[in-house]
Structures are given as C-alpha cells and as structure tokens.
Image (cartoon, rainbow, N blue to C red; front, side):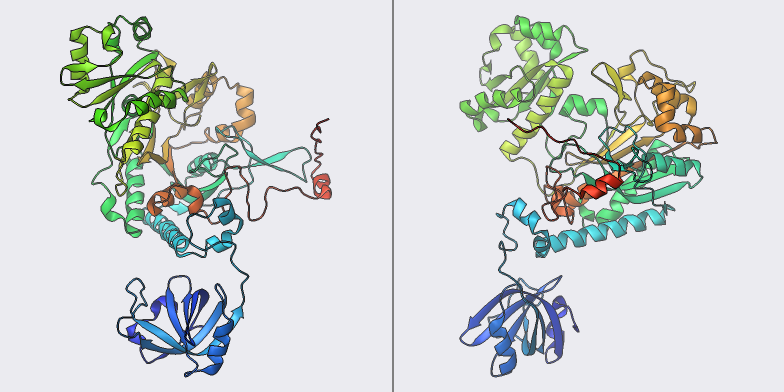
Length: 591
C-alpha cells in the first residue's frame, strides 16, 4: 500500500511521486492549506493538502483528526526557506498530496501520547496506544537488536539453540511456582518453569556440549520495578569448561550485545572481579553500585575499647556482629541538622537500632559519641576512615546481616540525595566466591540453588569447619547496582548432590520425588558442566535508560501481577473448572 516508509523521504526524492501510510500525529489548518504530520513506525513526514493542487485531497483532509490512519500519495518538494525542521530526518522536504485515503478513524485519545505525566495504570490499560509512541518504538527496536545479537554471538561460539518445556514438574527453586491443573490427570498439576535449570543440565548429560535459549521463566513472587511474574532470560550451559572460561563466554556475549546496540564505548577493557565477602563488607550488597565511592569501613575493634556499654558489647562478638563506618566527604557542608536526624529514621525502617555520627572539624571529631572514646581512639577513627575537615562519618552497629543491609541501603540513599551517581556510565563487576548455604529459620538453604557445585578440597570432597563458610563455584554479573544474571558450575556427581541434599535436610525419598530424573541422569556419565543466565529484560532496561522493567516488556503486568489490558487474572466458566476437577472454596462473607 506504500512505496516508502516516512523516514526514507529525503531530498533524494524531490520531484518524485511517493505513497506513504501511517497515523496522524498532528493536523494544522493554515488559512485553507492543511498540514498533516504523518507518523509510521520510524518517523514523521509532513503532508501538504492544498486545494490548489487537489480539491479532493483537501476535502478529505478536512475530515482528518489525530490518530486517523491514512494512505497519502503525492510529490516530494523542498520546504520553503526558513521552514525546515532540523529535528526530523524528513525535515527538509514535504509531500504535496493529490490522493488521500482515510483507512480508519480514531476515537479521541484517552491520554496524550508521549505525555510522561500520564498515570502508568492508564498507559497499561491502553498499552496498544502507549506502544505507538516513538519512545516505545525505540525501546523495542533496541530489544530486537539485542536479541538478534545474542543469538548471533552464541551461534558464532558454537552454541545450539534448544527449546525446553513450559509445562513441567513443580520443583523447589526459591520462588513459588505458577501451577497449571491437568484435565487428563485429575488432582495433578504442571508447573510453569522458574528457569530451565534442570533441563539444560540434562542436555549436558545428553552430550549437547553447548546450549542456549531465550527462555520464558515464571515466578509467583512479590513484584517490584525490575521484576515481573513472567520474564525472559538468556539461558546458557556448556560442558568441560571451568569457571573462568564460562565467565569469558558471558563477557563476550555482553560485548557483542553492547556493540550491536551502539554502546561499545561504555564497556570496560576488563570486567573486574570482587568476592562476595568484599562486596558485602564494603558496600553492604552482593550487587554493588560502583559508579561512586562511599565505601564502608570496619571499626569494630576500635569501638570495643570505647566506654559505651552498648557498642563495646556488640564489638565483643566480631563474628556475628558488625560496626561499620561510612564516610561522606564534605558532608558537614551538605546536610542540615534536620537531615542528619532524619537519617536515623531512614535506617530504622530496615532494622537499625540507631545511627551514630561524627563531624570532622578543625579541632578534631565532634559529636554526641566522642565522650566515650579516648583521644587515641578518636585519632584511630580519623586515620581508619581517612577523614578530612568537613567530612561526616556515620556508624551502624548490631547483628552482621542487619547492619550490612541497612548501611548498604543508606549508602545508596545518600548517593541519590547528593546526586553523585553518574547517569551515563556502565560499571560492571563480577561477584564471585558466594557462600554455598545461608541459614534461614534454623535450616540450611542453598544461596543460589541446590545444584550449584560447592568448592571442594584437593581430595574432591566437601571440607569445612563452619558450614556457613563453605563457598560455591557461583558468580553473578552486576551492572550499576543491578544484577544482570549469574551462574555456577553444576554438581555432576551424584554422591556430591546427595551430600548437599542431606545438608539441606532433604531426605533421599524427597530428593527422588522432586529431582529423581536429574539424580538418575547423573549416574549415566554426566560431564562436568556449568553455565549462566542473564536477565534479558533487565539488560534492555539498563540499555534503554529506563528505571522500570515494565517499559521494556510489550504487555507487562502491574506490581499486583495484573494485566490491565486483558483484565487477567479473571474468573473462568464453572464448566472449565469442572473439567479440571477443581472446586472453588467460597470466601467467607462479613456479617
């Protein structure tokens, strides 16, 4: 129906007849001559409907309103002197229309397209209109480019794309499963996969050597700006590779995606590595944002000598407790006294009992805590924290996990408040040497998943004095404080897998019930293998410079896991439930 897209109309076509099609972005009547900005998927071109050139086209143009669908034929001519629009690719030319067809009319828009102040719920309800905007088109062009680049990169490295099942078995992998009832097997359920983890391991047992997939994953968990109930990840697995080689594959994949999307200059020469312990102790997070400083310093040994019983008692248990200092350069001149008091309210929301601070003055440290320290220890704090006149140093004290969490959050809060986070920088870091387990309500739980290979002794066995100190061969890639993804070497020997299950309190019967097919496969010559998964939606979110994953998914859910466009989830016909052997329990009504 057209000879050209709008973006193609340039000075090269002056004097030629062209046909374009699209939506009306705007219409203006200038004393009888009607100007229409016509937009298609890429660009806007100006149409001129002059009764002197075509009375019929002008008559049709009088009926045209915003977002009508048009097909227009006419001759390309240069715009008049001083009338060019440098903001458009087509800004030097216009089309003088002699044939204009209204292919479809539009109701008045429920909101102004492209207006960023529009409530997100309205935009999601009319998602097909929101997607019509140039901003959204650019995001999904970027997404398509990145997906093609990922496939090409992995194919060049010898990976085979394999699709794995979407209807599978419910297995404990960290989040709640979405369940699908079976009509054929009454009372039994499929689960939508949280990841293809078990299947990609089975493909390694099958000798596929190198697998990848842009996989749909489903998790029934509490949502936030960078989470959705269904999401896409670049899923990769390979055999006979050590941890360093797997990480090199991931780095090449990232480089190829960044280059294809025009962000090559934002890549570092090398991706630095940091241990989990260093990340937590220095930044209070296993996904540290390295675009700015504000590092935490351990001062528990100094506080042990202070005369404040609360601090000294905490400091006497350095294994389970922490006292962390966070220096803010020139903070004394940045924060008001009211703000300083408000900081304590902020950290209390995350479990803090309080927040101490010192101000560095010409005459030395000042603050309500100085009376509890000797002059030598005050100087030790100055030296340990590298304080200069005008600096403020904050202190968090208490149980290790709680202190690292709220001080890490406080670090990010201060950086945002001081506006010191650069917007156009990409800071990558690998986090390595994760703990194998974490203690949750008195039970050992795998920090990543129970198929992660623990660090073994030279004899190939689990060797540890403290089970919580046992490390795993796991690694996460972080960009600007967001986890892009991660992976690990996998357990490929059944005896190690069984030992891990035993440590987690999973009986042999339970293991067989939930993972029997994998355990059986490990007995048939499973090769050493490992891999990673990258959150594809998060990658696009960061490349597009948006702060919500919903912006980069065509038809996303809200934070309550609802689709405002289709009104899902929704009730179904009772006959459907009957076929599935399901009876709904009625909610009790209030009296």
